[in-house]
Length: 110
Length: 114
Image (tube, rainbow over all chains, first blue to last red; front, side, top):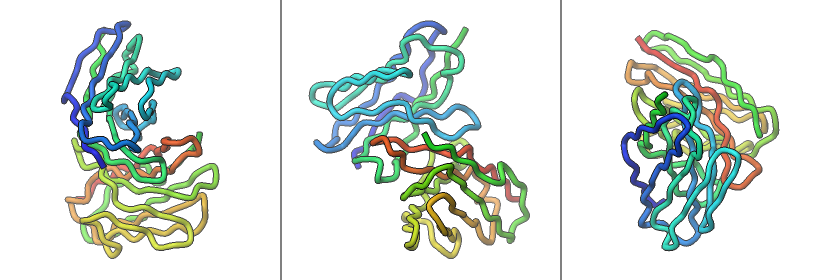
């Protein structure tokens, strides 16, 4: 599996957009980019995933660069409840277990 | 989406003893996974449990220490055997969802070994 690199921590003001970057320069053509988050004392929660096109759902948007070597998770209007550790994971499909890195600890402040 | 429950939610155990953690899913699933999250760390996969076959363990984890059962498509157990303080962690189960790329996680079992 390709490895990912994320900043250790980020801050974001409540109501502003949170842009979380992820580098995955060794990603292969059939690997997807997944984003999960883990709120304190809870199990990880799936957010979104994509292959090469940008994706949007009710939680977030995922922007993948054309060369697929990096991506950005966008929380358009961050709330205090979005404070969590966000994991960017590269994987083949849901039939395989997830390789969690260290993730980005996002702190949303009032 | 799948709803997953784990029992117990937390426990404090003495070294040398064993604890069995249960994972119950509200729908039938083929693949289940067990992860460990040590204090302040990320999640590490222990094993993959498919119904009707032996669990597949990741490097560094062995069946004698972490025996797993998968008696049906909605249930699995993980036993932490002969515990030491180093086994103090959160243990989580997850299942592969029907939507491609989705996995659903249980709330975790918080284990403290004294």
